[in-house]
Length: 51
Image (tube, helix red, strand yellow):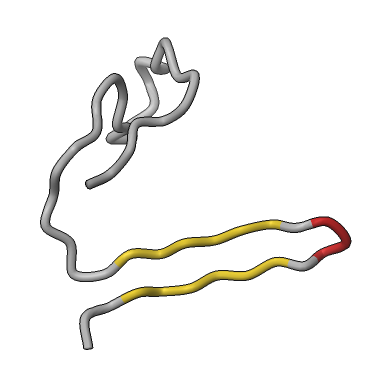
């Protein structure tokens, strides 16, 4: 399940991006990327795949 983008209201008509808005979307994925930016440059990215 992909949660909707928080506080998103109006898409740019020229942007070719598939955004999840309003309600969560159920999809089947092969992998998921999670990235985070922290204070002081403590950044991380994790790629999750099935074992």
